[in-house]
Picture 1 (cartoon, rainbow, N blue to C red):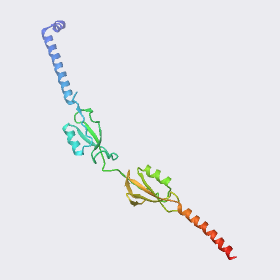
Picture 2 (cartoon, helix red, strand yellow; picture 1 turned 180 degrees about the vertical axis):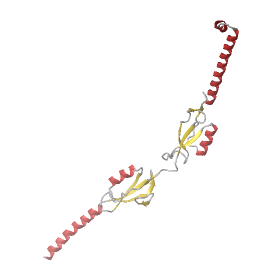
Picture 3 (cartoon, helix red, strand yellow; picture 1 turned 90 degrees about the vertical axis):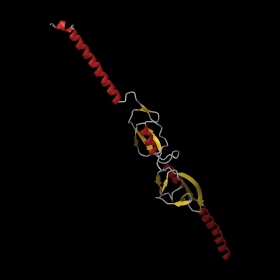
Picture 4 (cartoon, rainbow, N blue to C red; picture 1 turned 120 degrees about the vertical axis):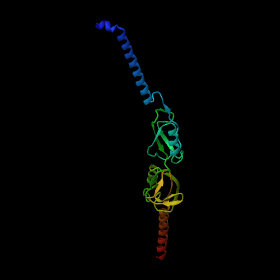
Length: 206
């Protein structure tokens, strides 16, 4: 049988059709497997984890077949409960695939603490910017008799005298006790008042 006759024979056509069907079936199976293994077009909407505890967030994500990963704690936010979720990546409402990791950041237990700098003996102009730069708030300003005006004599927090080197949470209110400078004028006035009296006493003695 010649090649041309074989090509147009029923046997060849039948085998060709079987081969085409086999290829189509094989391609369909491959595409189905890929679709199943990659969850093609199957996405999960990320739930909102804000203000949930770690245990609550973990349980919620497990229900959505998602995984949880903790990032480092952020700065303390008083609007969120302690140790609750303060941030998450991806954001709530994002579409992700099954088994995707959701990264969360937990709210710490409070503001981080900062060491009190040595400001006693410094001026008010030096002390206030230093304290504000560290995150503290300036509270009540009071004065005591002292020769140097506006020199820091004491620092207080909630009525308690504090020392350099102590640690207080950021945003703590620090009261300053300053010198009023009046003692200098009082001393100078008393010296001036004494000198005329001395002169008068000497003239009288003559």
